[in-house]
Amino acid sequence: MSRPLLFLILLGFGVMWGATIPLTKIAVSTGHHPFGLIFWQSFLAVVVLSGLILLRRSSVIWDRVHLYFFTTIAFTGTLIPNSMSYLAAFHLPAGVMALIIALVPMFSLMIALTLRLERFRLSRMTGVVLGALAIALIALPESSLPDPSKAIFIVVALVAPFCYGIEGNYLSLRQPEHTGPVATMFGASLIGTAISLPLTLATGTFINPLQVGINASELAVIASTILHIFAYVGYIWMVKQAGPVFSAQVAYVVTPAGILISMLVLGEDPSSYLWLALGILLIGLFLVQPKPQGDRPVS
Image 1: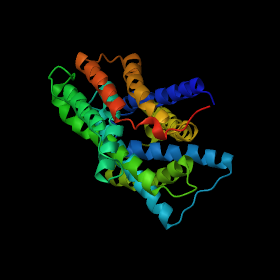
Image 2: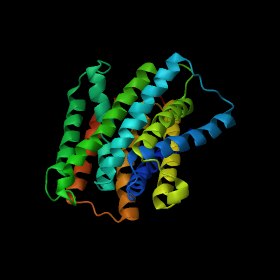
Image 3: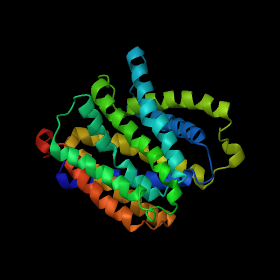
C-alpha cells in the first residue's frame, strides 16, 4: 500500500478520534451520570463488535489468562478513564479535553521508563516537560478557561491519558497470542458492561431510553462509540501495515481535529493560551515519538 494512501487513512482515523471529543461534551450536556453513559457505551460496543466477530467467523477465548487480560483492559481503557473524562467534560471546554488527551504518548513514555521498557533520552524527556508546560498554560492563567474555578477538573481529566498510558504498556507486555484488537475490545467491553450495570442500578444512575428518549445526548453516545471502535481497530490495523512509528503520527491529527470540530459543532472559541499550548504540545509529541529505525518500510 502506498504511503500517500496510508496518510489519507491515518488522517481519517485521526478525525474519527477527534470527533469523539465534542461528542463526549454533548453526551454529558444533559447531566447523565458517567456510570450510566459508560454502561451504554460498553453495551453498544459489545453489540457492534459481536457483529464484526460473526462476520469474520472468529472466536474469543475465555480462559483465566484472557479473563484477567480483558478485565485489566476494561478498567484501564474504559471504566476509570471514561468516568473521569465524562466528569471533566461536563465542566471543561471540548477543546481543552482534546489537548489533554494528546498527553497519552507522554504518560506512556514515563510509565515505560519506570518499568525499564524504554531507555532514558534527553530529547524525549524534553517532550514530556513541554507537555507539562502545555497543561500549565491552560490551567494557570486566569483567562485561559471560560471559568477559572474549573481548573481543578484539568487534574480529573489527566486521569484518562494516564490510564491509557498504562493500557498501552500493558498491551505491549501481556496481550495473549492470537488475540487481536476486535477480540480485545469485545472482551473488555463485555467485562465493562457486566461491571457498570450493577453500578448504575446501585447508584440510581441507569439511563432508561424508554423514559428519556433518544435525544442529542443519547445520539452522541452512539456516534462516539461507533467512531471509537472503528478508529481503534483501524489504528491497530495500521500498526501492522505501516509500523508503530508511522501510526503514532495519528496523535498530530486527533487533537487539532478535536479542537476544530468543537469550534464548528459547539461554537467554542479557544483562548490564545490554548493555541499556544497546542503548538508547544505538538513539538513535545514530536520529541516523544520513538525513532524511526524500528518502523516497517512501506512499499
